[in-house]
Amino acid sequence: MDSFRESIVRDKNLAPEGRLKMDWARQHMPVLNRIREEFIAKQPLAGQRVAISLHLEAKTACLAELLKDAGAHVAITGSNPLSTKDDVSAALAESGVTVYAKYDPSPEEYKEHLMLTLETRPDLIIDDGGDLVSILHAERPDLLEQVKGGCEETTTGILRLRALEKSGELKFPMIAVNDALSKFLFDNRYGTGQSVWDGINKATNLVVAGKTVVVVGYGWCGRGVAMRAQGLGARVVVTEVDPIKATEAHMDGFTVMPMAEAAKVADMIVTVTGNKKVISGEHFPLMKDKVILANAGHFDVEIDKLALEEQAVGKRLVRRDITEYQMDNGRRIHLLCDGRLVNLVAGDGHPAEIMDMTFALQAMSLIFVMENYQKIGPRVLDVPYHIDEQVATYKLDSLGIQIDRMTSDQKEYLNTWKV
Image 1 (tube, rainbow, N blue to C red):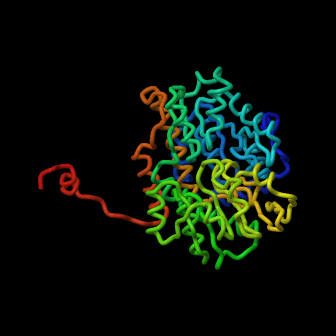
Image 2: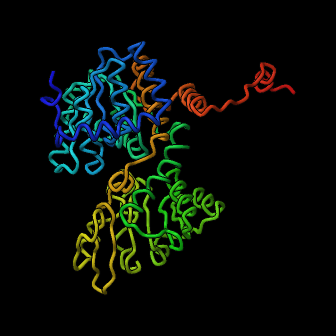
Image 3: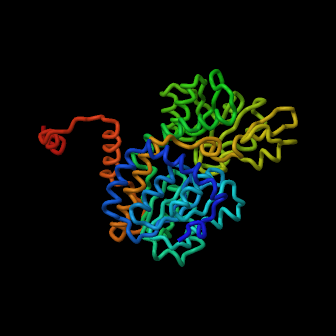
């Protein structure tokens, strides 16, 4: 079968360049490579159809090819209009994975690509942000019966899934991969922390040292962004709505204040909340000239772009991925990447070694849900601890690190109430 007859990609001639990126990523994903060897031998997904909606770049392509090598027919689309890499899409389509994705599609094209991915009639789903599962339940219930279950990659998607579960409308089990220890401790903290600053630095070519950086939200992603900003020499301010996280930010050495105060001192603001309008119309008049706004949450709703447009008297593109809004008092506000994910639009996303662990969790969790979906039922569940532990063990093995093991006497001690 000619994969390009089925796939929708920008330019199939970009495939060689995309293959180089994928090969580079694979060299630095030892956990996924180890799982690949097992999957090729056992073919656990033979005959299964897998639909994927993820940020379609080189590391994601390695996951898609792994699932194909495990016997599945894989269809994939992007989970964000500006994070798809056209050369990677072309290379993936050439390898036999069905691809429906282009960089910067129209809203209609983006929706169409999601629909086409679902129309492959998947048995299993890997989602990022919840678009596939949401559309499936709301608009294509005729396709629900075949779906055994799936996995969700990010906080935003899990919030949507839990709302669907709470309403009693979720029709199949979904594993909350984002909540696994081997995901949020590494991907969210170290992956987001590094990739956000990779993206901001690439987009702006400005120094971070000496600037005041405001991090909006102190979850695991926010922790990573704040930590790396501090490492780059910034003065870091954190805003929060959760008193426990705010206290933690304070104890970690950061200044904590409300957004209305932080907006006055910020040179750069990074939103990492998963919620909408955390920078709203009331904040823009408070900001300094040439402030830089960037979003690292999944959807482009964290910065109120409509309010910014309404308050601005003019705007222009001043550099790739930077829109300058001119305010009526002469101030300029610089919005990066149209408010979309700065680390994937302006950068290449998380480092390969980090996504190695996350995508290993995805692959192993997908097998688990396929084998146990009838027993699990329609609910959101955590990654089983043995999978979490296995991924971490494989990671240590790849680093040549050995750790101690408890003796039987120690295990017995921990499982008794007697001294």
